[in-house]
Every structure is written in C-alpha cells, then in structure tokens.
Image (spheres, rainbow, N blue to C red):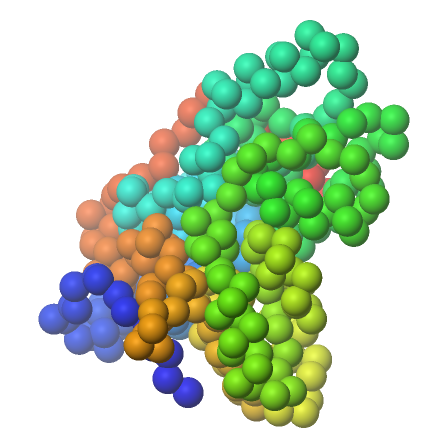
Length: 329
Ligand code: SF4
C-alpha cells in the first residue's frame, strides 16, 4: 500500500541505512537510549529502544538504564521524560518541535482562569491531557492520556466539578463516556482538527466493509462515524485482536500507519486525509509538522553534540508529583 503524503521536508542526501548504523554506534558510545513516539517517521521508530504512545513512553522513561535519553517526539514529551528522570540527560532532536495543542493552554492563562473559578466559589479539580507543558502540569490535579483518561476521571470525587484542559474534543468525548460534567478549555490539535467529514464519508463509500478508527482528539462529527475510538496504543491492540484481513481507515497522524502495519500486517491501512483536493491528491495535514521535525540526521546530531537538552526547572518537581500519582500509581 502506498501513502500519498506530500511533504515539504528536504530529502536527505545521507543514506538512511548509514545513518541508522551511525546512530547505533553513537548510542553505545554515549550510553543512550532512544524513545520514539508513534507519530515520528517509521525509520526513527525502527532504531528506537522504546516506541509507544504518550502513556507508554512516560512509563518506559522510568525503566531506562542508560545515562542519556533521546526523546524523538515533541517538547512536552521530552519534559515529561526529564521530570521522571531528573538525574538523566534528556535530549530532543529539535527544540522547535512543539505542539499546537499544548500551546493552546498557556500556564498564565490557565492560572488566571482557575483563580476566576475559585473566586466564583466553584469547587473543582483540574484534569489535564498529557499534551501540556510542564508548567501547566504543575498547576493541575491530574494528568491523563487517551489511554487512561476514563480511569483517572473516575478518581475525581463525585462532588467536584472538573476543569478539563486543553483538548475540547477529547473532553467532549470523555463527558460522553464518563457521564461527568466538565468545564472544557477551548484547545485542539491542528492535525486532528482538520479531518474532513466529507472526505471520510467519501473514502468509506469507496471502501466497502472498512472499519473506521479515530483518535478521540478528532472532532465530534468524525467520532460519530467511527467504529473504534481510541488512542494510538488502543488502535494497535485492536488491529492485533482482529485476525481476518480488514481495511482500516485511520484518522490520526499518518505516521501511525507504520506501527499498525508492523503489529498486524494482515490488514490494509488507509490514512484519512485532512483535506482532499479536486485532483484527488491529499494535503499533508495529517502529518504533524512538529513530529515531522524529527529526522534521522537530527537524532544522530543530537547524540553526537549532546544537545539540544531539556534543562530541569523548579516547577518540574510539582509536575512530577502529579505525573507520579496519575500515571505510575
Ligand atoms: S499531532 Fe497534534 S497533539 Fe500531537 S504533537 Fe502534533 S500538534 Fe500536538
């Protein structure tokens, strides 16, 4: 199956296989492990020691035995790895790999809104999706991922209101599955936000018998058409549980096709495009521009140069207490 993804990234002149060999040698020389999110390019996932979604990688980060971690993902994930491993050196291939969702909830605005709610006498706990900066994590009561959100929300006392940040779509989905009332922060992910319902309906019609899988960060109209709603790890577990070769339409970051194909190669996976042009070509909107900043060259360079590095900040300590009780206990 071929993926039709238009990318503006310059094509590397270095041979990927040579780069992979170089990275393997540098990992030993520098006593480093590589953690790679499911949304980075498949070739980086192939040289990683750990791959997974945010929840799995946050847990994996505590099992790393080397003195250096290279986190191929985005900035907030590198922060979480550092928070869990203060004594280790945590490198990220590109310091500019941010996250539109994390950026949609700046810590000063969250603190001001919490203050406003308190001034109104509202009795609430703040639950944050893991896609938030460490500064935001230090301001909240709980951290959730798409994999454990339901279980954590059940731990919020029933007499408390819930302020859920930053993803309004995931929040709306959680209101539906948990029945809890929530105050939703109006944030969203630029990748999941652009999935077009018309395109999804068109591909579904063209693909009889297909199964639609979508990430809960997708808007409600996409989730209403979806057969399997779940984060990336749930998607992976689901395709492995289906023996009969099936065609899956996958509405999440397009790099996710790589781990799905590896886990259950009997199926066909079609990434749902963001916007389809009249020519039938897809835009690259289902590739996260931040995740795409991770390349084999940058992984090699950051190992070689020992940077960019995530530095410890004072508020990491409080963020750690919240991450610990939410993800590890
Ligand atoms: S896919 Fe969306 S939520 Fe994930 S890192 Fe990119 S911008 Fe952030």
